[in-house]
Amino acid sequence: MNDELARNLNNALLRCSNYYVDEKCGRFNKMYPFTTENISGYIDYFPLKDHSLLTVGSSGDQVINAIDKGCTDITLLDINPYSRYYYYLKVASLIIMNIDDFRLFLRFVDYPKKFQDNYNVFNKELFNKVTNELKFLDNDSYIFWNKLFSNFDPLLVREELFSKDESDDKSLNLFNSYLNSTNYKELKDKLEYIKPKFITGDLFLTEIKQKYDNIWLSSIGPFLRSFEKIKEMTDKMASLLNDNGLLLISYLYATTKVTPYESDYSLIYDLEKIYALLSDYQVELKTFLGVNFNSWNPKIIQDSILLCRKK
Image (cartoon, rainbow, N blue to C red; front, side, top):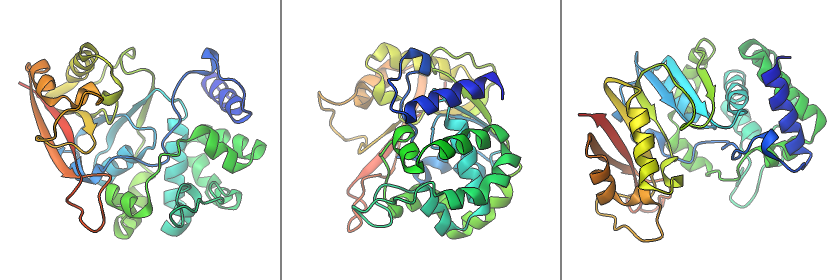
């Protein structure tokens, strides 16, 4: 077992033991089991087939959806070191399982019905079905999950390592094109042979040498508490773009060009100031069906992305 895996596994075991997590264990948020963004709403704004992508997103859904669109050169950057292990667990499950078992194995909140959680999440019998594929894809990921599921109730692992911010099935189907039954079947063959690169670290502190055609920063923006940090993040990421590259600065929930800014919002939502702050770039707002849509009137809620190009 290599040093990185040993350290990450030990820290995960401590977390599942309800051990106080100090700096030695790493301070980072829990993983998202699935995306909380409508990826299908914005993905077609980006040229992905035969182009490169740097993305954040511990759920791995950004990577899987990009592969579904024909992207093969992908790097996942996340401060949570377990993101790589979860990506391969999800991919192994997608390859081996039918879509119903895939949901049963990975879904938890409000599944199979609203207000009824899935207490068979990470079911050991289903996990045993994917172990050979998981070993083939990434043996470190097999060691990581096998150790955790052997030492703890899988439900406890789910609660200690993952966020409970999880959308319902109807929403997840909308957000993720790969959960469409036809795409799901076609994607299996692609996933086994595409090996994303993984970078564990803080976006602001991590040195990244490659340049990319596309960069997605998901919802990091709303957590930044100063315009200086927003500018610093944008400048650093824009410097990693190839010519004509596209940078998704931030996903904005329930926001369009005419949404008034309120004082209790995160600064990234103050569009007038953001446009002025980033005047060195060509910044656009792209709007689409929102995450918190109403099934009886899906046009009520709209989300957007801040899209940045070099001038």
